[in-house]
Length: 283
Image (spheres, rainbow, N blue to C red):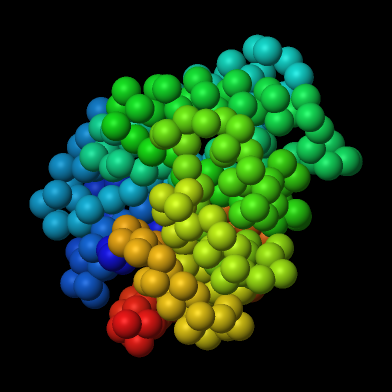
């Protein structure tokens, strides 16, 4: 098991100016960080990867699509192609970064709704888009971790069962699932059961408290969560995803209107201790 921290707490564009912070994350005990991919070129991420290597941090990648002009399930073929091209670019950046996993709600436009539930036509278009994305990911040695989001952020897949049913239809070895404790806490009647039922499809895990703050201070059933993950044999990333008000656009997108912790340091330092303790107790 590896412990990571998502850089969303501070930025959507990690650079040299974050080196001191990254060094403190490393000193805290983290194995790696999760790098947002929203802008730049593969060469930029190659340079960032070299800096992370010097610090001694491994990495994963995260992205999302909020622009309706590149909706992977849209009716317009040009719109879907734009989404696929974006994903190919993000995969190339992920590979250049030296990461093996790119996760997020990479199945549909974040925050866009049709007014009804997902249609058979949208699922069919999604299958075609994801197969094209998966083929490119395979060539770059990258696995995509699709995320089931709560009903207030997307409508295509809200639960792990729905996500995995769709993955089976996509049937591409490079398109997997991500389990996020925040979204599971909202949508799943049994968050632990949702993980257990779908464990073989899960390639990445986000550790996120019910309020998006410090893991361990809220009402997510952590004892049962860590026990289920450890018993399943999952031995990859447990990455903390937390949000704050530092970035206005990101705070607005994630509906963060208040501070959830006394400081960013409390989030990553106490969060690390929480995972270590929970994982040890799960043994």
